[in-house]
Structures are given as structure tokens and as C-alpha cells.
Amino acid sequence: MSRTLGLCGFSTAASFLLPPTMRVLDERFPQLQTQTIEAEPGKCFDDLLSGDADVGIADTRSQELHPVRGIPISGDNSPSRHITAVTRTGADARETVAFALETLSIETKHLMSRLRADLRD
Image 1 (cartoon, rainbow, N blue to C red):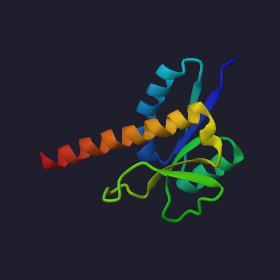
Image 2: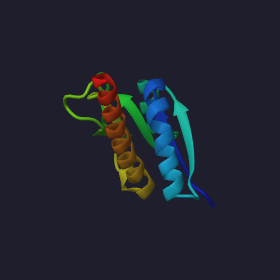
Image 3: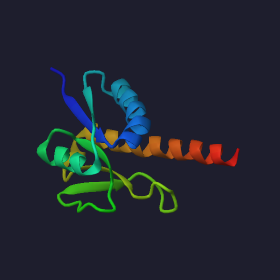
Image 4: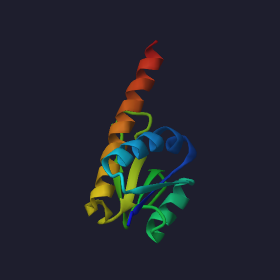
């Protein structure tokens, strides 16, 4: 029996970060089904708390994170410094959720590097 991992994000972040994250998850966990949910940050928090999503990408400037755990996915000086991978408190103990969070962090670094390179050119 396969398990499902729900990934939620607002349109801009979802379109750039979720597809490569899902590819890496598919390679690492072939029996895992991934589901994408495109939603505004507030809805992502609702989906996390209801269990409809396991990992979300949200702009945390205007959100209270409890009982959601935020994991910054970009540096302090980055234009995306308020973009955070979020999950329910304790959910990152699941191997698939922890791996998804780590992959989102890596994919964000790759994306930011490409954007900086494009800006220099």
C-alpha cells in the first residue's frame, strides 16, 4: 500500500519549487504518492492543520506559526527570506516529511543561485 504526501504552496513558489521536489521524492520513495495543492499561504496553514497537506510553502510575515513548525528555506539577505517551508509540529519526524523539507531547502538554494546568476548577466 502506498502512502501520500501532500505538498502545498502559493502559485509562484509552487511552480518553481514543488516540481523538482516531487521528482526527488519520487526517486527516493518510489511507493510514495505525492499530491500538490496550490493555495494561498493562509489556506496552506489550514491544509496543514487539517491534515490535507504535510508540507507547505508559505510567506510567514503575517502568519502565527503555532502549532505549525517553520523551517526557513532561504538566507537572511535573500529576497525570499520570508518564504518558509512549514509542517505540523512533530510531522518532520516522518522520514518522508523530513526529506521533503530538506529537498525544498536545497531546491530553494539552487533557484536563488540561478536567479542571482541571471541578474549578473
